[in-house]
Image 1 (tube, rainbow, N blue to C red):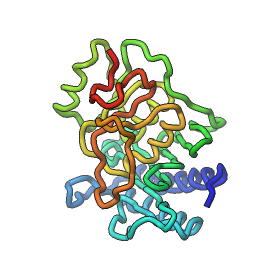
Image 2: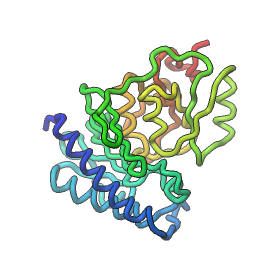
Image 3: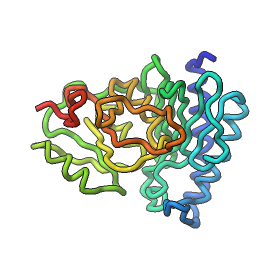
Image 4: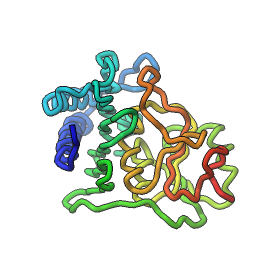
Length: 268
C-alpha cells in the first residue's frame, strides 16, 4: 500500500479526535492510578486509546497496532512489515501536573522505519506531522500548515532541550562536553519537535523511553532535516518489538553537532 498526503490528513484527524477525548477529561477532576511499572495512568489515556484503535482499524484494517495501552493485543507486523505505533497520551506526568505539555503520538512503521507520523498537543492545539519524502509541518490554532526545518547553523549557546520530569547523572555528565549552552525544559515528544522546527539544536535522552514515545517525532525530525541517533552512531529503529524500550539516543538537528560513531555527538 502506497501512503499519500491524504493518509497523513486522516491520521491528523484521528489525533485531533483523540485529543478531544483527552481534553474532556483534562478540564475536570480525574483519578490517577499506577500501572505495574509505577507509571501513571488516567482515564484520558484509555479514552484516547479507544478512539485511535477504533479509527485505525476502520481505515486500515490490514495494519496491526502496537499501542502503549494495548500491548498484549499486538501479534506482530503485517506481511509487508508494517504496523502502527501509538502512544495515546505521551507525557501523562505532564497531564497530571496540568502543564499542557502532553501529546497524542501516532506513527506508521515500515520495516523498522517510521514513514508517517503525527504529534498532536491538544491543550496547546498544536500539530506536528510528516510523511516520508513529503517534508515536516507544524500547524497551530487557526493557522495554515507551515513547513518546518532544523536550525542548519547552530551557534553558541547551543540550545539543548530536556525533560521536565526526568534528569539523571548520565545527562549531567553528558552536558560537560558543552562550554556554552542553554537548557530548554519541555515535556513529552514535543522535545523532539522543538529540534525539528529549529527552536532547539539537540535533545539527549540518556534514560529509558519506549518505542511509542519517539516514532512519530522521529519522522517529523527526519523530514525536517535531523535524526534520532543512538550512541553507537546508528539511527534509531523500530524493528524489535519484543523489546519495547529504546536504547539511549540523541535527537539532533544539524549534523555538525555530532560525530558519527565515537559517542561524543559534538564536533569540537
